[in-house]
Image (tube, rainbow, N blue to C red):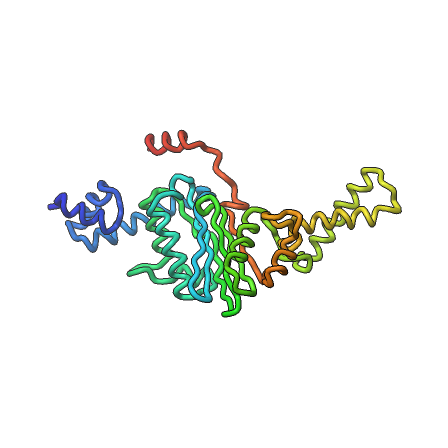
Length: 290
C-alpha cells in the first residue's frame, strides 16, 4: 500500500511532482529505490521531449579559488526559471565541480561526479523536475601564476559575466577592467589579436563606403586608415576609452597602474542564440492548459 509518507519521502529525494511520485510507487509496489529509478527513467523521457525547445535565457557565473578560475553559462527557456533557486544551485554545482577537478573539456565536465550521479545526469533530472529544457552551453577553466591576478564582474544578476587575467597584484584595477569588458563588449585584446581576414574584410567595406561617398580618390587610403582606427577602438579592449575616464585609453590606464592585461573571457547569456518571442502571460497560460 502506498502511503502519504512514502510519497512525501520520494518527493523529497527526487524533487518530482506528487502525482508522479505516487504513480512511481504504485508501479514499483512501494519500493523506494525502484521508484527512484522509475522516476529517473521517466525524467529522461520527459527531458528528451524538451530538446527541440530553445534555451536562450539562463545564468552565467564566475568562481575563483587560488590560481584557478572557471566561468560557466547554463541556459533555460525562460528568465523566470533562471531566477529559480534550484536552477541557481545547479549552476553553482557545475562551476564548483569544474573548479575542484580542473577539467578543460565539456566531455570531461559532463562526466564529473555529483553524489551518486554525474553533471550530465543532473542536468537531465533538473530538466524534468523544473519543467524546461536546460542546457550547459559552455565554460572556460583558467589558471594564473602567483604574480598575476583575476578580475571578475557580474552584471544584471549574471546575465553578463566577465573574467580577466592580469599581470600585477592590484585587485581593484582587475575588477575595473572586468567591468570595462562587460560594458563595452571588446572582441579582442589588441590590434595584433584581430585576425587578418577580419581586418581585410573591414578595410574592404570601409573602402567601398568611402568610394560611394564620392571622396577624393587620392585621400582614400588615409580616410580608410582613419576609419579602421575607429574600428580597432570599438573591438579591441586596449584601444577602447576607459569607462571611468573616457579620454584615457584602457592601455594607458593599465600602464599607469603598472599592470598588464593577459587574457579575458566575456559571457552574455543567450548571445548568438535565437530568443523566444512568447511573453510571460502566454507562457503561464500554456502551462495551465497543459
